[in-house]
Length: 352
Image 1 (cartoon, rainbow, N blue to C red):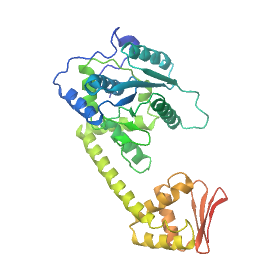
Image 2 (cartoon, one colour):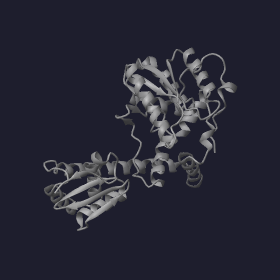
Image 3 (cartoon, rainbow, N blue to C red):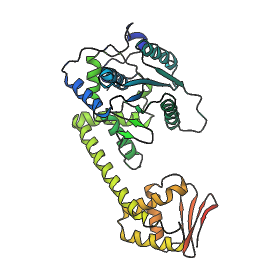
Image 4 (cartoon, rainbow, N blue to C red):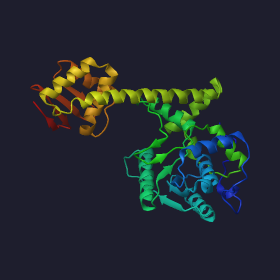
């Protein structure tokens, strides 16, 4: 189920000369749509770092930025991460660097070290990438990282979180914590492929994208089946639902935060705090109460409570149970009118 755009190695496909030959703008709908989407999110005089893999999505994004560079007085630099997962990746990174430098695009390369044992490969690689991006933003006085996520990525992420029993958050256009912007998030994969074909862009292909042992690849394969069964409009439907659910969850978080604020005058875990918390939980719908507890315990535990754990904790505060056991060896026990919180047998909160 591969898209029609050529995805061969640079060594077979890239001609000498310009890596990104800018053509005269035509009136094709894909070009208009993509240029409008990107232009909408960029600031005049903006200084941007492009997360560039050499694949079709990031190649299209970079090509669009170069088309807009003079019009918007943009500063555009490129960051490429060689994960070292494939034998060819080092050679491909070198060729990407040569071609970017030939087009006077500052190119920054990071080759990842050996992955520490016992770490999740995808999570570790993502953390390494964004640490690299942060260092470049600071060191090069750039403002924002641009990534080439599009509508299908939004849908895939939504489905991945559903299949993993996680809260189905939606990819945001802008992530202030990472200083990352996704200007193509409203664009379809078909538009991106059409644009790459029209502009005759040469792109890299990563064979690991076909490895179904990775959850995202398996979800991508399943999404292909959904498109074949229900038509291409299924992606837009899922994207719309993902955004709606995200907005509703955000509204729940706001309501929960307002109620949590009313506990700020009490000391966490003490008798008056527990009494007030119980009143709030009794008055709130279960989804709001669970989010209150997630917000209250996040600073203490350092990681968000899962939905099941938040539900258990809510039942604990509403009932007369003596203690509740949560994952990661967390125990919350009543003591007098307050609570004691222990992690791996060590008390971190002791109130009466």
